[in-house]
Amino acid sequence: MKSNLISSLLILIMVSFTTIQAQIKPGYIFGLNFSSVTLKTSGLSSRPETPIGIHFGGVLEIPLNRNFALKPALILSAKGSNFKIDSVEISLSPIYVEVPFLAVYSFGSDLVKVSLFAGPYFAFGMGGYKIETGGEIQNLSYGTGGRSDLKPFDVGLNFGAGVNIYGLLISAQYGMGLINISPASTIDTVMKNKVIGISISSVFPGKRG
Image (tube, rainbow, N blue to C red):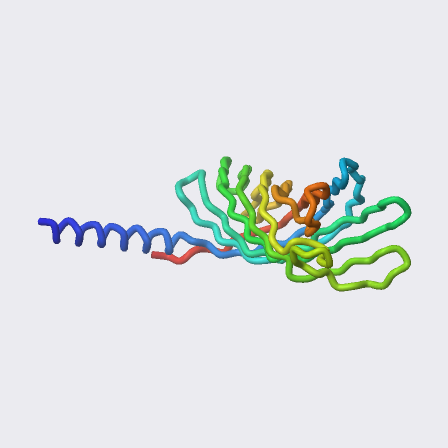
């Protein structure tokens, strides 16, 4: 009897996995970032400017039922900010490989739907540049030492809304960094990513069972 129960459970798991796999829909996303990096040092806050960057990559849509879905993605995202500290102007333009994992709730008709979404993101800095007053363009360095520009890892939350028209999703979202990305060894300096994103995305039809 025990072997029959185990066999039944294995069959159920395989059928469930096959069903989910058949429903998974790959797709794409691209859009604009209006980003800033908040900076607080020694109790003083700077007012960063908001440059424009881009983001693009691939997404997966995993339907859970008629209204709910999971949507992980792999995105290349250009962020950054421009600061003025005393008489020194600094421009930071990091590029991240970002993995957002969103829970999506959609409602409406088959032709037009409204989507609300939220979830965490995990990002790794892999490039970019910086410019200081009167200086040349230099590559950003990632690390935790005093000579580094930014820490390599970032974690945060994304939330937003969009309208899906004939399968094309136009959305706006806010990304809020939760951890300090300053490589400074003291606790007096805190830097966090903030991004408003506008995106266009779509998914392709999933596999037919």
